[in-house]
Length: 224
Image: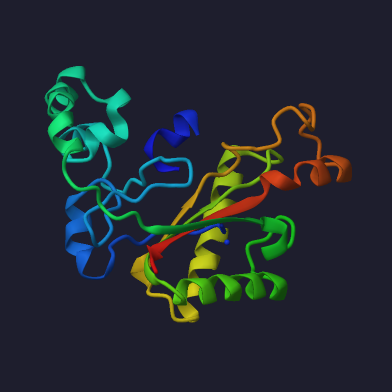
């Protein structure tokens, strides 16, 4: 996910355009995804979502840099902000967005090793669209993942294609394109751990065991 996720590392594989409605221009000036209230959008793991403009140098200049990437920035960059924390804490807390995070097995959306949505996958995304229409939607964050079978580059591309397919479908159902942010993580963030051994040989047993790794994490953020 974004902030530091590559280093530490209803939900579906998506995300590529940024900017919440009238805040598109603002998003281009920021290195983190900012909602309409000026609050940094975060994943279900509490990590800030970065835009394509993110670099360590740019993060150091962003108002949310120390909140999101303190460990990556020079200590002197965040020291002044640390001293100001008590004053900030006394300010009224911003209203929290209504978040719903869902993880969908990629196999429920696509055939194995494919990036074309299955009819069953479209039905699951229809449910997501209904949930999004029931709130004042700010953004949908979606990250695609693959299992470890195959090369890094291939899996990265597959996860991105699946995310793009999900976004395209959501947009076809009326979700604004600039409210869907997609990203592919390839095979970098498995959830199976050592459960399936270390073999990479493509066998049915291994494919079945690694199924939880083939997933799409989708987070719907908005207010009710």
